[in-house]
Length: 185
Image (tube, rainbow, N blue to C red; front, side, top):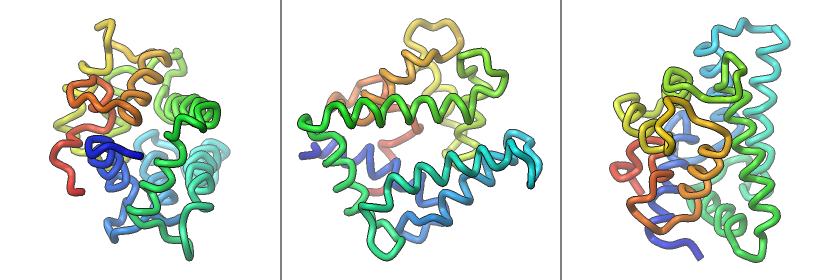
């Protein structure tokens, strides 16, 4: 069962994924996210790099398809998906999801392929997903727990895990996608 805080944070994530803001997530949202990310990364259409980005965002959608009806996922269906994913009985599935999610973030945003996400690359994540950029520096500082000016895979795994599972309103990972406190539930 999701806590009220988890519902707020995960509803914020739903609102980000609902790229066209029509109240449901669907394949078109993930296509638009992929297109936006390709633009941010200066990737031309009809290139192998473009197909990789589009394949990754399409893959995220395909993991959600079993939880939606008629190709459109409501907030309630999203929260049901997250309830199942975060159930302690599904810890191994959750760990795989967590690692795949972070790997996808790094494939999409570690532009110089140095194994870290810089603040500039993190800001690109916010721009590409149309998250209010004003939250990016604060979010980055919170997630960069060792304060070395870059996010490692370990820091991102910890941050995503805190965002998904923590019921502590002060957990650093809550800032993963910016100002969740102001998001509509």
